[in-house]
Length: 111
View 1 (cartoon, rainbow, N blue to C red):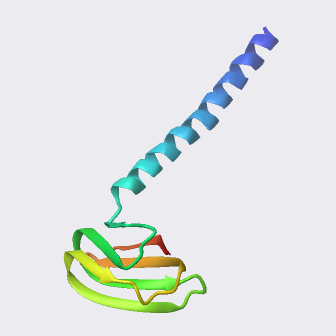
View 2 (tube, rainbow, N blue to C red; view 1 turned 90 degrees about the vertical axis):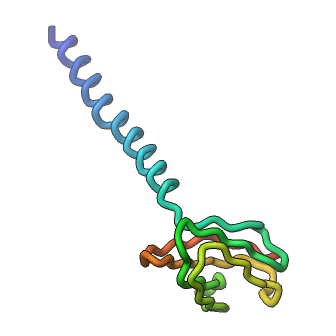
């Protein structure tokens, strides 16, 4: 009887701790994917970067890997084309704030 109780206890602990953790992580991931405020292409980029926002975009900042702001753009539209030919090759962060003041940051690679 004691062995059966131990097995039942182990089974309950396993199912409540590990299974719920996995389910919650998947739900958080799905929520993050739904919450994206913009998409952009191509990445890596050569000269022209195209950005599409779910709502109007107010501000775009391009930041180098050292944290230095290399470009700032102000808009009031949801479809944007930016000339990035002046950027040097490398890794950047693109930070976008939309009209609802939601902020999102993604990686950008310049060829």
